[in-house]
Picture 1 (cartoon, rainbow, N blue to C red):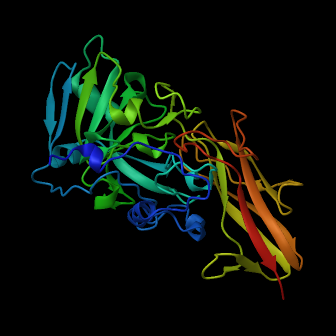
Picture 2 (picture 1 turned 60 degrees about the vertical axis):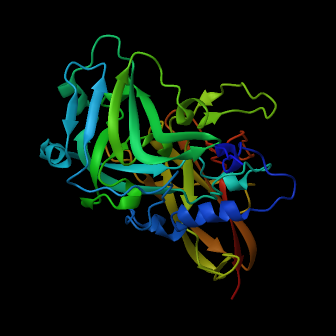
Amino acid sequence: MEGSLSDVSTPGRIADDGEGISAQELALAARNHGLPLEALRYEVTPAGLHYVLVHYDIPLADDAGWRLCVGGLVRRPLELDLSALRALPAVTHRVTMECAGNGRARLSPRPVSQPWLLEAVGTADWTGVPLRTVLAEAGALPGAVEAVFTGADHGVERGVEQDYRRSLPLGVATGEDPPVLLAHTMNGVPLPPQHGYPLRLVVPGWYGMAHVKWLRDITLTDVPFTGFQQSVAYRYRQATDLPDDPGVPVTRILPRALMVPPGFPDFMSRARVVRPGPVRLEGRAWSGGGPVVRVEVSTDGGTSWVRARLAAREPGGWAWQAWRCDWTATPGTHTLAARATDAEGRAQPLEQPWNLGGFGNNLVQRVPVLCCR
């Protein structure tokens, strides 16, 4: 009896009422680890603590055999090995990267997929060649409208066999805001395998799906790319009964503030315990739409809010900003919360946003705390 891809790759779905996390989702969670929230104390996330999402397998790559091909609507097709790329003038950008599905597991009803809570984020110093430098060398022909990026990771998703592939408008790919990188170095050392060794795309301000890892091909096209990861996955869709709804593309990161969990945790529940008296509340805030201009903190579950002290964003930077707030804890139970507002006036919602894929869920974080002597 012949098999088909549909035997192992099923359509996306919403969890049934009362349905718990499945063994398949637990397997995804074991492969795709998040940032321990106490690691928000690091301005630059160590590579081993930075969140990881791998759609398929981590490809085996080596310096000698790897090539980046640049083709399509270009005057001079290029084939560059890693030494050639490393010889080009490099820049370093500190960039906060967040998975588009961060917060998905907190939704109700829950989209069945990688069950992120709040931890799918990290900030690194990425070093590499500006993408516009390489595209200028290749020379875009008139009519080119998009750059399509292909990674070496190969798999099947919802019945579609594919390489991981995404595109950017040519204006974004060649622009300076954001300054898109062909990155070969993370925090001063070659990319770790799980972060895209030997080369990945870094698109500051955009959710993680745009940062194609294990990058091996760039093709300029005269029509918008309609591959799976562009036109099927990573779209904001509201309706569950409109299968042909094209949705709205997921692009820039929505504002978010996260709090370093105060005090100390229970092993199993991760519930926090603090002692009565002064407690320093601190964390990080970021947005893909510009600097965060305000972080507010609540210690009573959102009934009242006070403004936190917010560090300035680095000039021209794309990294998170530190914030802090002092609280006098009293015996009893408390629910702490933090919310961010960016320069474009976008603020985190207090009520659950929802969409079919569970993308861009930036609902405010709430941290239950027990204060006891």
